[in-house]
Length: 390
Ligand SMILES: [Zn+2]
Image (cartoon, rainbow, N blue to C red; front, side):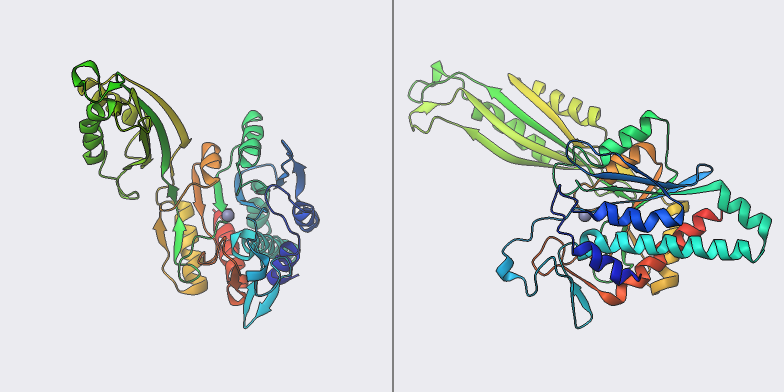
């Protein structure tokens, strides 16, 4: 099957989060003949798959998700979202870009790679070298049907299971759609962390006409909030923009015009780079609030740890594969929201996200250029090959 045929078969399965709709079973049926052993690590109604070929040497993994976001109003789709349709060289369907094409391309890449190596072995071409390389490295796929939703029982559960038995991954490509204008232009070698706080500043409620009897928490907090907003938290680094601080919600007051509120609640969020740490940011916020003499409670939530893969073997292999296939010079980027890469980075020192153009993701008439499908598979194949041959 071509990449196009495979992605069409996947799109035809309406796998809206967390329903896998048989996608993983289909993918498993493609991987089993290639010599992968298939393991289902399902949890909390979520389907997860861990497929591995080989048990030794470096482990090279592809990670992704089979689930898709809801379609939105069906009437707005030019063709039904779960009936893959090609018009003028563009394949339309929910999941076409995010990220069933990446999965199909990865499977084809692995098929080509494995068949080519087996042919070479059978022909006796460099039997020692190739057999050694072949046997001493392993390939894996980590797929979940819960990435677009809460992501509680998806990738994180598989990573926990792998951790529990001491399995680590040496290199991982996450097939998220990272390209912006054309295939190959962008790969993500890191993502910022997300740290949220709910700050409650306490005062004393009373009548606005008797200021000596009240402590207005809005007045008390205002200079501290101004300072928080004006603070430079770090300068970023080679890979990340500076850490940003944003207040998202602020509420106080009873609704009445003659009452000073007794408390003031402020929600804020840090999108932070690897130039800052969670402890460091929290300490600085506490010091600043203490310096302003505030009485407060603060509840922190770490939404996501940041991860970073500095330039190295994986970035270089992928960049070279992109250049060889598309003659585009890929840029490294750490922008955008969080992804499942943050969980895998816990057991994998080199992780990069790379996939097709993301202009249509989550939209009505989600699509991918058919002409990008085989090149995407080629890029994955060349990258795996380079990592296997070292
Ligand atoms: Zn995605």
